[in-house]
Image (cartoon, rainbow, N blue to C red; front, top):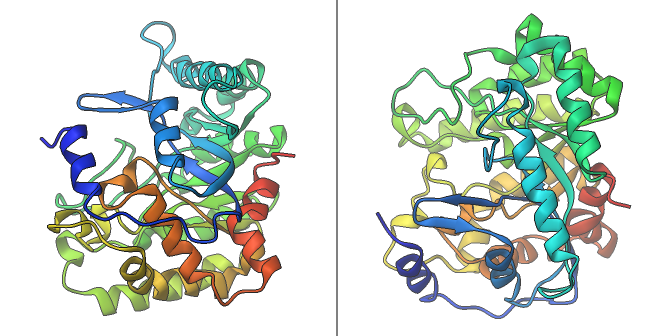
Length: 335
């Protein structure tokens, strides 16, 4: 296994200065965790923020970190929200930097327990005034060569008990972060139409797959993905996070190269996907995301945001503001 030190030496083979360093950024998707050979806490985030981009605020997204060891199973995810709120307090000391880290917190609650999830969500809300919603990963593919991040069953978004739990989000004015793979996007359309009052934030441009049975079929998959994303964009309560394609599951394999990719190459390779999303949803329903430290597997934080700035170069100042900051701040109600 590659250690953090080895990986950072590899990342340092491609170094860039931040482009347009004054542009305000709200990074709406990052994690904190402590895993074997992979720790990402407040100081690690600030090390990445130190590359020169003006990151004014961030949103923490659930990642199964620091669940409670004891107590009822449905309440264990409260440990993650408590953990992040502790990092918020640490950040408020002012000893690390000026970014409003975890200005919004998206946690986990198992919506498949139905109406009972209301007690769990109320407990999250009582833990912090920064709690904004839930991410319930439903990424599923029948191929054993495609990872299943969580052990939930196929077609969970259509399950009756899940939808009971989902209705509680509407009652409590909470949003839903959706991470699934592109063959499942029709399920998301059905869910969005059934609950028009819930804001759904689609993660990682809908998860276009490029491994296993999808390997070597990029043009075909791209066409299928475009058709599905157009249907998603027709749902006015869905917004999309523009990013995440450097994950290995997408099949670009940047992480296997002798040197990390440059922002110019990254922008060129991802432009067909990212610009199509912006065309379909509009800048007011799109937000650039880092997905760090997951996307750190392929490039540095500075290179990633440079790529986004190259992509957005031809947009108007107001459109750029939406993509880099305003959409995320509005959707997650950061004030």
